[in-house]
Image (cartoon, rainbow, N blue to C red):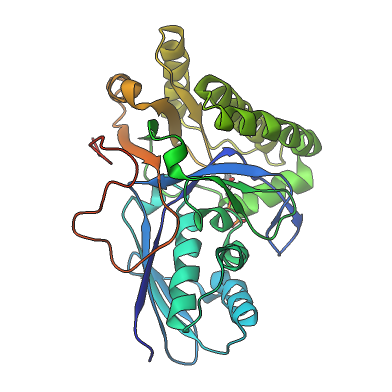
Length: 336
Ligand code: DP6
């Protein structure tokens, strides 16, 4: 058995969503996606070269080897090795909270396994290997703001977390149970059966330049409106699938309406929603308190987490007092 290596990655929150694959089975995205890697929450993975079979646990639970075989085979092929791995991932956030744990999970697993095998691949190669696990994981390898173009094998960083130090993401956790349909299956059903799928692909490509411009100029209103359009179109396409699929719960809809009311009242709160019932709200530091209070007042046991643009892959265990990589603005992450 090799020495154990440790790698951490933050979840990748898409502002422009990836939904649909251009090549089934190879995780090549049909849409471009632009995401922010979240700081304040992470997956930490420990890996070692060991045994004759790959073995993986997440938060202590053994995982189905079938879900990981393509990933491990791609990793071995890319690194030119034959090693098998024993790996254990732990999420610092609720795994079932719809916080893109597969993006941070496969990114951290890629970094930990590569190091455990004695390899030091480039970030671009790490991104391509992580994509074999989950396309969104290709983005989590990088910190800050990250682009995965349509059809791309690897993601690339657009700008680091320091580009927008006062950007915050308030995550409204509306429900903790695992989602009814995994995103991989839902996106394939959308591709195969939704009459809106091709409109979704076309519109997504058109949203990207707008989002990149908003990011470059730190125009939160433009970025927020573009992100709202992206998730609305994605969920519209999902609703058009056969059978139709609705990930939203009453509390999800309540948060959407609360964001609209806050914007009308001058509080900058722009929501986005992934394949689940949670709502992620883009805002600036100055509005965090008002947003957390408003979401808390909705009742229904909604919890909030506060995240910021975070770093890419980090090696070694988390320091006891992690340095504030972005801005001296506590609290980094709070659960209420
Ligand atoms: C809604 O990356 O989990 O979060 O590539 O099949 O593993 P696979 O899917 P995954 O899907 C993420 C979908 C999304 C949008 C996004 O992160 O861009």
